[in-house]
Length: 555
Image (cartoon, rainbow, N blue to C red):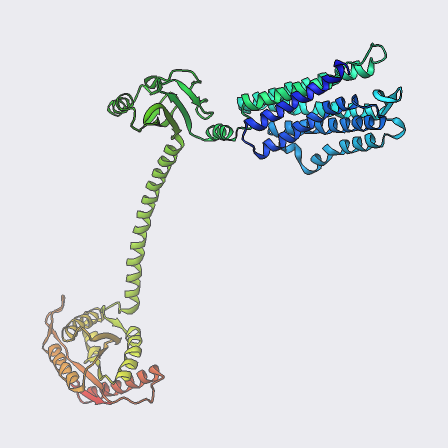
């Protein structure tokens, strides 16, 4: 066998060496496994081209030809998929589109395997070392060129996007590999198919060489740009996606790393010398700034932090510096820069809103106090008599309904006075109703002086008043009634515009309850009406007997 026979084998061995090199030099991940499978398919083409020339059996030669072209179709699909993944254009792989990618390859495989009427390939001189191609072959060429155009378009989208420099570098290497493969495949078709009859012989290994060169570009991309280095990718992607600006300096304050968040605000690049003083704003609190600079220069192993205001860009910046320690030696410094402008704006807005809310709360508290006092006044007005200020009949009735039931429950004695001002009509007729009202009020004052704190005085109606004396027996009640009657009788009412003092007396009907029955236990209102009727009869009896006296009833 001549040298031309061994060219494809040599290229196969070169691809195999690259395969072993990738396998041995990287940490195997799922992505590496996928690439190794892809690389293995690249190795099959030159192997099949070599195998065709090692046998004179036409059937075996045809098998290797078919296998080689099926492998080439799969290889082209593999290139397209790797292009999509490496450029981050995975949205192209929606279910319908991903299935369509494999449809042409399936038709190619069926046509190549069946080779109906020699439409794919025919032997020359009875063997397939030299062969002619039919329409299925040209269909394969069209499909492969279409895949290549799609790959180039996806690469163009990645290069024209806002992707990081690292991604663009690896995409550029993929583009070189695709162009290299396309160029050598087209040269192979041109010289060994289109111009085959006009040339003295077949030029071997063109497609195999294109595959090898494209694989070399891909391996260079793996190692130079570390496209499969998960740690490096994660590190770079993390610092580029962090919202804080990150600046890494060596021990000479040279920039060795700067992330994307810092670049729009500060013109810093890898290799620049970082000058902390030039970085700080000119207008700042001197003492605060000097302390930070002193710590930064003289105590490089300490962490430090300062918040700065840059008036030229109207921004608040929080700067934090920390040493990078390796084996107890400072090898550099990491500086993080966070934009605090939005936080300051939110704090100012919150403070302003809190001020408004405090003012509003004070207003609401004032309104609440007014409502409380108003409600208390309204409640007082609802239960008191407007003329005398003592309780009204409605309030006393409500209280007695509860008190009577409690007294009946615990067998507690109590007493009720019904009081009437004697000959009050003659006072109104003699002095007028205004003076009559004054007499009523002054009489209430005198009566109140004779009562205990627990007693309840209420205006019953007109010049009549009722007193409830809780926990009071008949004897105690009669004693209080006598003292009350005597005090009123002895009191001289001095009234403006009245020539002489006015003396009045009162009549009192007294009702004491010592014995309780269950007759009206479930109806306090009826029981209360019976009590009022009884004490009213006692008062009527006192007035009938000449007034200024007490008539007592015990029940």
